[in-house]
Image (cartoon, rainbow, N blue to C red; front, side):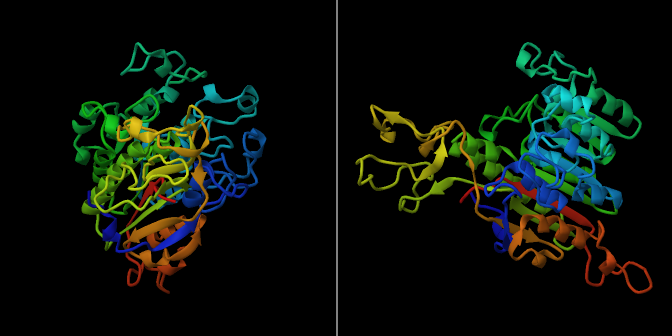
Length: 440
């Protein structure tokens, strides 16, 4: 495996990921930072730190808009591609204003929040910015009335619709877009039956919840992240004013939470393929591409392993405390903590290279946690040099907006006569590829 990240030449900088109320952040507050340009409380999306998690009445007046909306308001095409649900924490910060990241549909909300007028995230996807050009990921069940069988898994009730309000959000979107060259697809075959040149709006919901891990993906029914990115850019780039695309390799994060390093790292490889494909479809002369993360994980890689050793293999030494082998990949906490007969499990007795092996962890938890250190920023294209040094996470969208001449700060984009000046700023496109970081 050869990474495409060297095409970015080097790490340009680092960003500090903490939330306003948390040293170690969650994905909702961080997404609000690098999409909306303000730090936020953990568990909240698209609202400032004045909003309190799960308290509906603190939403109004504290909404903050994202770079996706700034781009749309400037006439650019915009898109969201993710391997999670399209209403999961990261993508939802691009369009929603919600004090609880878990309010996926109205079926997930408390009665008092609904009575107070708060909207679920799935509903906000279609109402807040009703003309998002491309939306691809999972999350079908949050779009349909409760107990509606899923189109792909009609016999599995856990995939049924979850909405209490009886609304069919997919049907509403389809009706609204039928005369605007808009298409809804739910499988890979239908996606590839489309000619991007004949599509202006695309809604692709390929699973009831998150997409499967890349190692487990059904290649007949579910597209890869790279394939989704390919289609998205081919649709969005038709706009002469440019585009903004948010791409999330979100199941990297899920693999780490599960303690399944092999799943997480193969998700990262697929993310890298998507970055490569995006680079082939765009130009560094008019596209600012940013690759970063919302946070890290308590994931480590050590043990003095030799060159050529499998990253999923054993360290070349035994523990000098319990005289047992250990894998080079370990977690600070998580579900991989295992004691057998009062002692650490001997990993040589299990298949530590199988896809779902949970790497050993120092502290037992049902889910591994995020890490709190700064994470890297890679960037290339116009004004990429502004993303250097150690920056606050919420600095990122302001740089991208500055480079693309969108949002509030546009004084540098015009000459004294008021006509556009491209002598020192040329980007017409802005592309953010967001990953869940791999290494501490």
